[in-house]
Image (cartoon, rainbow, N blue to C red; front, side, top):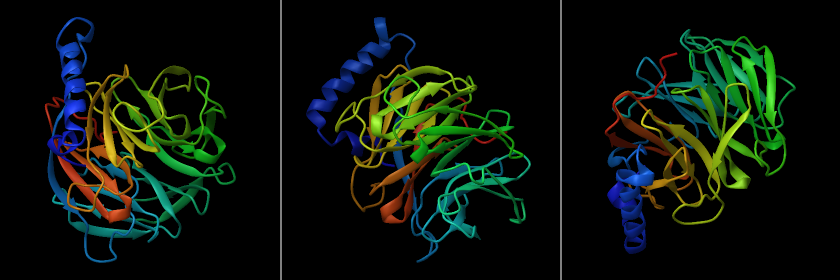
Amino acid sequence: MCSSEKASSRNRSGRSLILSALVVLVLTGSGRGQPAPPTVEYLLSCQGQPGEMVSPSRVFFTNSAEVLVSDPRTGSIVVLDLAGNVVAIHPTGGEPTGIVRDSAGITYVTDTDALHVRRFSEDWTELSPIGAGDFLNPNDIALAQGGGRLYVTDSAADLVRVYLTDGTPLFTFGGTGNSDGQFRFPTGVCVDSRNDEILVADHNNGRVQIFDSEGDFVAKFGRSGGGWGRFSRILGVETDLEGRVYVVDSFQACVHVITREGVWLDMIGEFGSEPGQFITPVDTVIDSNGWMWITSFNTSRVEVFTVEGLDVLEWAIY
């Protein structure tokens, strides 16, 4: 997570011309109704004490104003307050990756070692798992608007698996390929709460695909490559209620900001180990303050930025 000023400093001359053209489209004619680029500024970095947070991976904001961060190298879920302080560390007994929590306080964690979804109660008692024997590589997880359903990317199987929160399997969608609705190593997944659609980061196809809640293909955007308007090794995806999509690009060390129609608005961040910079960013979430939390796996930090101009924020109110 980095300020938009830092992001635009890279390739400033070329990108400023492109961004100016996009802003014109937003404000006139064919761009009417498109969301504007966000105003993003660096706020703080979260690291904790040595050894508390080693490999921050997936991140989730709860309705109790906590930030949950999975740490696969320590096997724990790290809990941050809104000041970025570590307030709790919960061992999982495995290799946690994706993480969500429902309105009943149940936490769901994908485990790439046990190859299923672990469930924990509010007091962190482990409950029966979900999907034991189903997965090749469980990765990210998203909770349906209103709760009830879980969408889990199975990266090695090129599928999204859908379950009820009690563990009942419902259906899968995807399959291997580059046609509409197919995947090559799906990674991040999120639910767009404006319409209950599912967005999936299609890593090896260099695109994001959009599905309805039943797994039917709706749309896609993106293409593989480097630089402005292209994806390289995308791992996380998030939306806001202004219609913007935030795509975490681990190789380019940035977060792409795009409309659902595929119009590029900005690139947030840059490679480096200084505060506000990333080495292998993985995931992002926007909290109820309009702050964006982005995990930086290989700097052992979570970087936090402010996002201005969001009237209503998408966060965990399920």
